[in-house]
Length: 289
Image 1 (cartoon, helix red, strand yellow):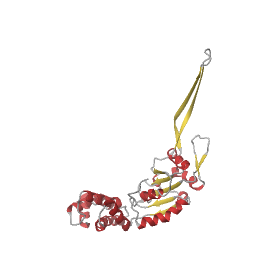
Image 2: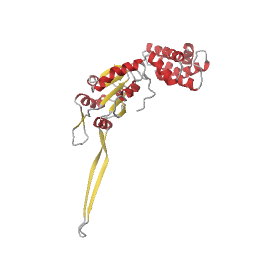
Image 3: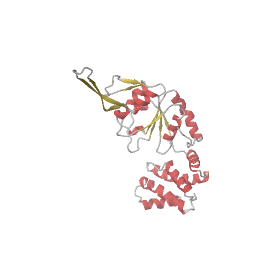
Image 4: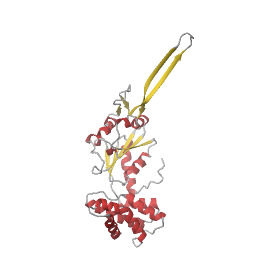
């Protein structure tokens, strides 16, 4: 797995050093925090530390047991015709159901490192499968018509969960029994880490990164006052990338830069601050830029 673009700041190094022993000991890790804070990137980075294949699974409300365990995917037919003796014609045909294993089955059988991204977007009923996987080390094969009633989990199987806070739209309340089996680490927006990511990813100066982060930070704080989710690091990366590639000076005295900030941040302002039109939001962003 190529992780050459991953920016490992002091904060990230501390998180990696802190959490790697948990995975080495076989415990599932749960990274939670607001969108865009880097949970998935950190999960992929942690997974790369182990010499095992990585499987990425995205949670969604339509996921069910068949997606994880498997299902019947058609039939196989075997036909035998015996005409060895000319006067005797014998025909035998056997039809069998063909079972296609789900992604979780593949991961636990082959000892993959599974990253279950935004797992709380899947229903608790679906995620209940992980209770026995994490506690007893077995995966029950509910309703699969298999000879085995369960599969034993490979000794090298590891799992990293990521989730957004429960107040996010489309997120289910996670059952306590599942959370109790994980080691949960909360990740938050951290200015120093964001600055280093902007500098390394976009090749800009520290003072330029600070200008962008100051503006997005003001929008984020305004949203937090309304108990809503403001712009993530992705918004800052968009501004920095556009300015760098288009050779737009990152300066509050530059109108092009201000326009880029308005175009990217105004929609967040409208979403967070009730009563503001897109024009009001653009004017507000211009004032803080």
